Every structure is written in C-alpha cells, then in structure tokens.
Length: 277
Image 1 (cartoon, rainbow, N blue to C red):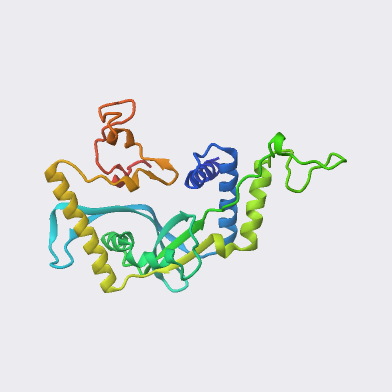
Image 2 (cartoon, rainbow, N blue to C red):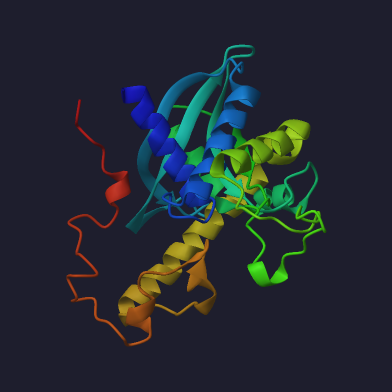
C-alpha cells in the first residue's frame, strides 16, 4: 500500500508538471506513461542514494572577497545526492520536466553553464559534507501528443456505407489508448524524451554562479530597505498557471484575505528539517 501511495503521488506530481492539475484522466494517463517509460529506461542504473530532498543552509559568501554576508544565508533543497559505485564519484541529481528540445548540444544544455542553481547546489553539498563531482541532470521532455477527440457532428464526413473518413473520429480516444500511444512514441525514440547528462562546474563557473547569488542578495537587501520589490510582469503567468498573488498586484485582493493567503511561521518552510520518524 505504501508503494502504491508513492506511485499515485508521483503520478499526480508528474501530471501536474505536465501542465494539468493531476485530476484530468488524460493528464494522469500521460503521467503513467512517463513514469513507466522512465522506470524502463533507468531501472538498471546502479546509482546508490545518499540523500533525498536534502536541505542545506550555509554562508552566503562574496566570491570576490571571501567575506560571509551578515544579512543572508544560502539555502536550498537538493533533489538527490547519489554515488556511482562504478567509480565512487558523487553527484547531485536534478529532476526536471520541459517542453524544450533536450538533444545533446541544444540551448537547453548550454544555458546550464549559466545556471546559478547548479553552483549553489555544489556549495550546498559541500556544506553537507559531500564534495560532488558533478550534477546529474535528469530531464523528462513532456510529450506533445494531445488526446484525439471526437470530430464535432457538424464536421463529420462519412462514406456511403456509414463508415468515417480518415479525418473523422466518432468517439473520443480513451485515456488508456492515449497512454499507450504516448508510450509507443517514447519507446520509438527514448533519447528524445528521457535524457541524463552531467553538468560540471569549473572554478571560474563556480565563481560566476556564486557572484550571481551575491548580487541577487544585494538587490533583495535594497528592496527590503525600501519596503517594496520591483514588479516582473513576465512572471505573472508561468508553467501554465497564473501566480496566486496576481490579484494582489492588480489591486483586486489583499494579503489580509485569510481565505486566499496565510502567514507562515518560517519564511522558507521547505528548508525546515522534519523530525518525523
């Protein structure tokens, strides 16, 4: 039962990442296809898990001077830390979903050279006592196939014997058939949908990544001093949904509305370590 519960949670999580809410049967079917294909592709990898959802908090250091910030700390949660028994190397693991082309050499991978998150997680692993040899980027490309729905009655084309032409569907595709069609597409070209690659950090790249984090902290400190933050309209709608604070920014709701918002006891609840058994 516990394993079934975890599978159900994973299914709904991937369905949610696939731009659904985890309740639409076609979103769930897509998630089931991805989970099944993922397991088939990577089940035989001998990676040993060291930590899962590992939170860290360490000094935010100015890489130019080596001085630690007196205002901010550097924190985060690392998806997974693993050891490869074939060479004893240790890696951070980042799980991602994307609609982009993730073929080797594409812009998706080139951008990771500039991604401060990878550098921050290197520093976080070191704070946890693990000097990692790289970040294993584990990417699922979201299938672009859509469910095949019945042709509207007014647009249906039937032959004289009553059978439909090839461009006419009389019934919606079932979620099960949709799932199988996605699995067939992934099976035909798994490297298009399920990709892993190692992202490394050279000394200069670590310096630049941590300097990005330091400069972001300086901007946050200035915003805090002014009592406001700059608005970013490009972030109002992302990942297929509208920011839950959009109504506040538009002046249509208040942060005091307890029906919509709550005040947390800790600003970064995701970094709190659970003491549950």
